[in-house]
Image (cartoon, rainbow, N blue to C red; front, side):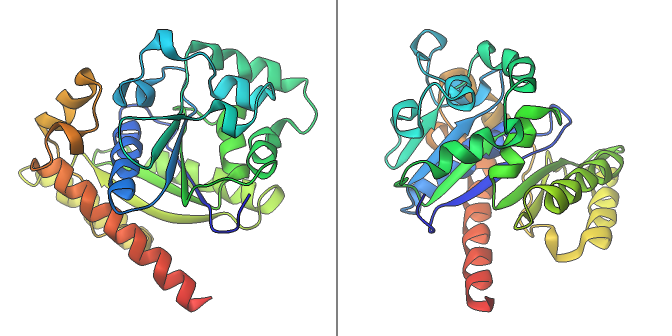
Length: 263
């Protein structure tokens, strides 16, 4: 793997927080910014694959085959209709990986081994993780350089976040010392809701600059886009959600640049 490839796991053990939407649209925005991007769909539901227009019948080689060790990254990756964006798709087969991995050697490092086994032509690998903290997500965390956490602006958000942060600390301490939190993204943001502002204040007070300045608003056009097999940025570039993801990508790239300068 080339040193320039940055691997970002997009994680939240709660479902319905905008994780897949964030992965698909951030990947699209980074590709639009001229980066070569690989999106790895690690969710058995395969929603990221659907959101990029890959039909279930066309998912011949998937992330299941990659994590089990049947194939390498180059064989599993397919080009999407979006320039510079490739995908390793997922389907329900991946749900069996949790059981199969239990008896495998180096079971927490299968994905890392796949990424390091060949030179990869990508600037970024974004991993869409399942809504759980099982072995599949653990593989993503041990292979990643950083974690991006989509956080829904709702009452129980901080409670779930503290559990996830403890898990990341454990992985950093025992398996992946270089792992860091790239940022926390507030999703489903509704300025008309006073609870949203309260949650935002609490999260920013608790985590400071780890929280991205960019927030992702609730937006009907973003909800419609996956049913058309398109990222929101392709479905409706001018909607508020698409514009927010373009800003998020720009902020992510700025953070990367600042980190490089500080190193």
